[in-house]
Each structure stands twice: as C-alpha cells, then as structure tokens.
Image (cartoon, rainbow, N blue to C red; front, side, top):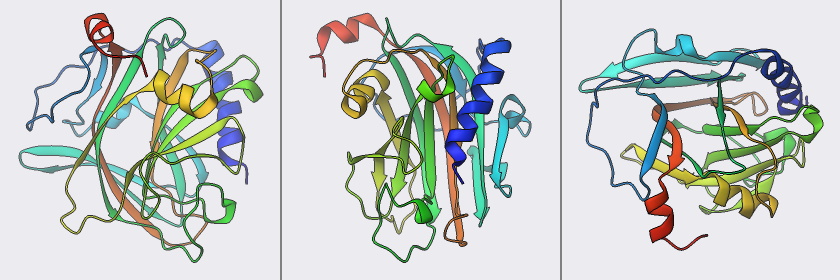
Length: 249
C-alpha cells in the first residue's frame, strides 16, 4: 500500500481549492522551554492545552485508526498517539514560504513504545515501515507526483542524522531526528531548519512552498503496537538577525 503517495494526491487536491492560512493560536506556556538555537518569528503554535485542541487538525486514514487524544499530567498537556496495527496521520494545512525565507519547525515528543520489528531497523524496508513517532513537512506541487516531503522520525537504533529515501517514493526523504529507547521516557525537544534539512536530503533548495505539517505513530506493517506523545509544535521563520549572525549550513 503506497500510503504516503496517495496521501499526497488527496492532500494536493484539497490544498488547491481551500484556504490554508492558519490563524495564530496563543496560549500560556506550561513548562520551561529548552534553549533555542534560532530566534523564531512565530506563525503558528500548537500547545495542545485544551481538550478540543485537535479540532484544527484533519485526519488521513491509511489502515485503521490511530487513537489521538489530548491528555493532561499537571502541569503539562500533550497529544498521545496509540497505534494497534494501525496507521492514520493528523495534518494541518498552512502556507510557509520556503523559497525566499527560512522556515523553522519545533516540537517536543516522547516515545513510550516502539513497534516490534523482526529485521534490522531501516528507513527503506517497506514491510516494516513502522516508527513510534513521525513529524512531516509537506511541499505540495500542482502535480502531486512532484510534491516533496521531509519526514522526521524517532528510531530505536539508527544514528541521529541518518537520511534515507522512503520505500514508497523518491520524493519523500526520512531524517532520523531522535534515536534510542530512554528508560526514563523524558521529553525530547526538536528544532529544525527546514531549508537546511531539505538541502541535505534533496541536494537543492525547495522549489515549492510548505503546504502542511503532519504527525503520525504507526504499527500497521509489523502488526504490533506503538505509543508516543507530541507537544508544543511551533511553525515560523528564522529571524534575519539570527541568519546574519550564524554561518549558513
């Protein structure tokens, strides 16, 4: 099942006929922030602080439904994703200029349970293409076969920084953002320079603007279970004073 390929085709049709500018969502911070590498001009923030926080997101079902729910453990709240041999993603449509500006995405996540794999872990094995946590940045094109995707994954064994090509499409590049099982199950912060990652993955600057972000926990290929949490998803642009003060990647 070429799940991501078909997701792109459906998404591009929606993208071409709908308004995708997100409204700024503001809520108070609920725990201390890790030091940021970049200064961000904030465009959209998802603190997942309310029970109905997921109403802004749409769901794409590939096989079965992953259970996404907002949970609270004072003083924090977050989205828990639980997959039992299922794959469905939550996505949010937003326009970010990646051809002329430097978009950033940041988030926090925690992996509680990894899908059980029989083969050595790989980014390119189709029948074991299950990961505890994924975050997508989608670059839709008018012709969906030209669309591109950056997919950040949390793996058990692959080194951080590993880049691979999806077994479903050469237009989808996977980047290992976090690796390993943490017995203490601590939150891990991620902050990604999207253009820099795109250049590393595809060898050139993006030719299309960002049209959506998504996240997913899946375990349908292995027929096992996976469980992860997501929080504090932020989207914006790198501020120019930061850009000038740092060497370009």
